[in-house]
Length: 255
Image (cartoon, rainbow, N blue to C red; front, side):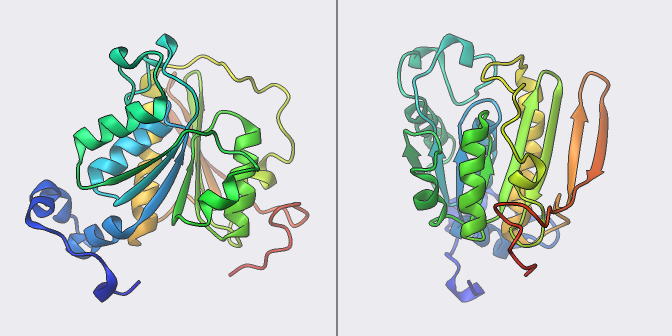
């Protein structure tokens, strides 16, 4: 998309984003790139909901939210888009309501489904970037396959207890999810210990990766994984490599 094709900002948007427009190498062109973009966030829980909150605040023009189910009391310690008065009601509806209150200039598209082999291809082909904040590997594998098939960047963010990890996947240039986890880890459980600030820490970093991807600013977390231990406040960067025999991306030539 050329500069001429990017949507213009109105006066309300310039006032809202004024302080981030001051960022070197960003400016109004960067803001217009965000406005033109479409980002899919899988799950709007402690990680994904916080990612969506920051992306909406930053002015990403179109945000697709995929999450099934209703709000439960146990969601409320970390899921910032859920509220007590919304208990028993659909999560995505709460997320849309909260994001629209935050920024009415952003288009929020709710999908009351979790990502799966049945819907991943259709949803991912229509977006620019995918944020994987899903807890289950069946969802993560489905998104990974579709992201690789359609050559869409995917931000992989996850946490457990006081630990978190982050990497950015660019099909053809980096390892994919299947390179890193060829099989569903048998020890991984659907429910696990979580504090909201831990989810929020990795979510904020994932949102930054999305903004950098869309605007071309900075260096991405590619071919490396950030491992975070907030019990000790230690951050480690580990090199990761593509698996030439990967069943999903092994045959893709570097582009």
